[in-house]
Length: 225
Image (cartoon, rainbow, N blue to C red; front, side, top):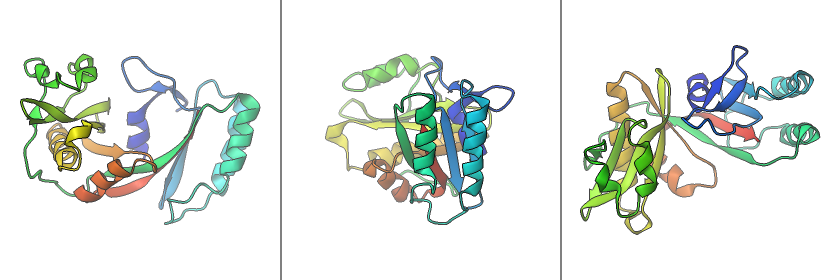
């Protein structure tokens, strides 16, 4: 979970969250709570008042270690109430995070996307073009002469990479997402880094990919912006 949080966000010297770990440094959550059955981790954004962080920490310390991580945090309502006193709530988000506990072999091999093969993204996945140079490894399943499913390292540290995945609607439910994620994970391992995969509880298709690959849930993300 610690590697997961460090991959998602940049931090200051106090381990306060500064921004999303990406080139543009998008706005990060004010409060992040990573729950595992072996313990919980919390992070607060740099602009959160210290006295509010202390109140939130007290509630975090009361959260039980549990195997039933799909349930909302015990003090979810209190977290929301306290943060509302600081600023309006923009978003409350929760979902599982996974790691690849075993090697996963794709049934069809994806191709690497780099500057010389980036034209494969034309035809529906052009939004990824600007990220080819810095989101590596970057893998794609190709059908009908163009990429139909992609997976790239969208959050990167030396220790871990987080997966970002997209499959064109017309090519879903064909196994492309599972294959491209498996190929990406193997490429990350060759860099001596840990591949990680996370999603929201609402994203059934993404959770199905994790299940198909046999991924192990390392914990649950809960955060409020």
